[in-house]
Image 1 (cartoon, one colour):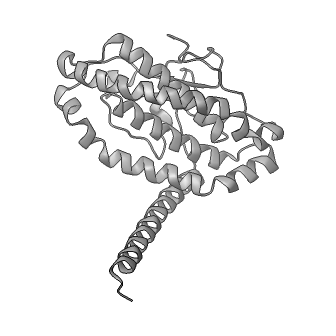
Image 2 (tube, one colour):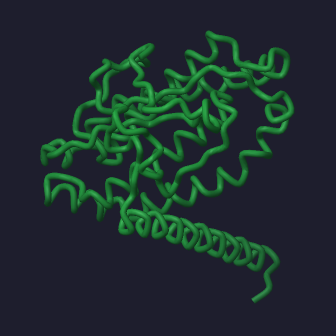
Amino acid sequence: MADGRWSPGRKEADADEFRPVLDIVEPGHQRRLTVLLRLLLLIPHFIVLFFLHIAAFFTVIVGWFAALVLGRLPDPVFRFLAGFLGYDMRVSASQMLLIDRYPPFALTPPPDYPVQIEVRPTALNRLAVLFRIFLMIPAAIVQSLAVYGWWALAFVWWVITLALGRMPRPLFEATAATLRYRMRFSAYTMMLTPAYPKGLFGDDDLAVPQGHPRSATRPLVMSSAGKWLVVLFLVLGLLGNITTSVTTTTSDSDDTTRLSGTP
């Protein structure tokens, strides 16, 4: 373990390619008061993340030029971006009701914190770095639809968790899968990994060999209900984007008609 990050159960690089790990310890119970006030409680973190996003944006630009020359991210750039990504994931996990414990104000969390990530420094393909902004478009669409779909029914998920004092397992699986895909997409975008985002519908149970450390998301073995919820997120995301596009087009058309004076 390095810098408070958990190591995945198997080194996927030995077999195929290492994919960034999002490790979440599923809470057995959540305090209803913290669920009720979750977004208010996280306001200080949202402020911190606002400034961290600005710093990360310029760091990624520096890292992009450096990766073109070196074929990898410089160590200080890698460490900061990895720390920023971990911070973002801890706040997002709390925001999406995956955990109950309050996120720490630190780029490096305590080793026992229930949300951990791992990204490994590795060589980058210069051509893939050069065209990264184009290569990430398909994954950007998928993660956008999934995240949009989750938030479309966020109030429903909040009411369910508040009423039960916990998040039902299929909903936990689908939410964790959505957040993990967003984490892998962000890692790919920031050049923390050469591995293209995968695993939106979970893992095979054999992804982590027996005898190795496991958690609720290591491996993320999803039930049929969990996978159908991911499908629901994607469908809602697609419908939401279509509705927004149609509404925008109609509004633009009405504005043009009024300006031209045509009835």
